[in-house]
Length: 282
Image 1 (tube, rainbow, N blue to C red):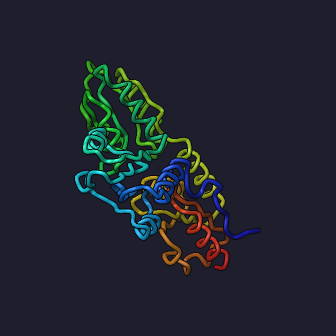
Image 2 (cartoon, rainbow, N blue to C red):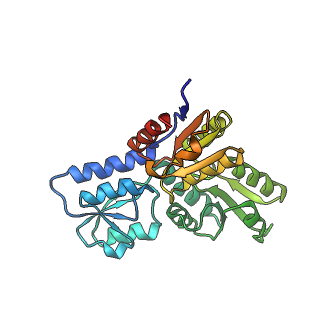
Image 3 (cartoon, one colour):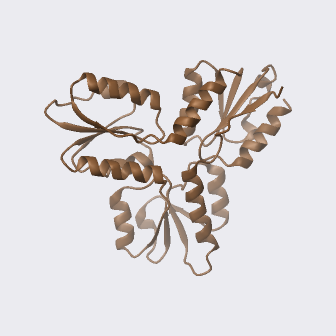
């Protein structure tokens, strides 16, 4: 019996694959100008370092990108106003927004144009959230927990639209829906959590019940990776989050009979492979 059990869903998701393929195609183009990314294209420092070596420049602000350059919109998307600014300045925009994020943006836009206020379950500092909020013209309330939701003064005379950051915890989101239903509010509920996120979380929970220790691989600023750690710890299994193999707590793992291994949606396969090889020798 293998000591290391690797999750089938570990590694790149469809949205990350598409975003990186767009950037790779642009890099390979012969007739092009300089290439910029507005913020990290995905939340993995090792991937970003490789692109930096190929001459891709990461800009923090839209005004740092010169006219005539190429600007690749990150997989997390950007606020509407930022994309409009880029296009108005004559910048060549390549939209690498994840299709699931784009769908969430358009769903929010479609369901808030009638005066509905957006209730968004998400992280204040996350770039995807900043983009999603920009698609709600009638006002927004952002919360990252049930406690934060309960602190919001909701008006029974207002109409609301509930959505979630695509990488949020589906179980908590279902609890949020029930709480709002009990309040008797006029709320449209959007199904904006990505299926790939749900599948990863469910597999991580199942796998954690079969092992002594879980290893989650991925960038520390990756929301979906942190969520995997949270759901495993909530299931009561010891869990360690690492970005690279050198961070593995090998001494702690020697006593484990079985180790579970999974990874966030922005984690390259070669990093997961390297960690699996080391764990199998532990």
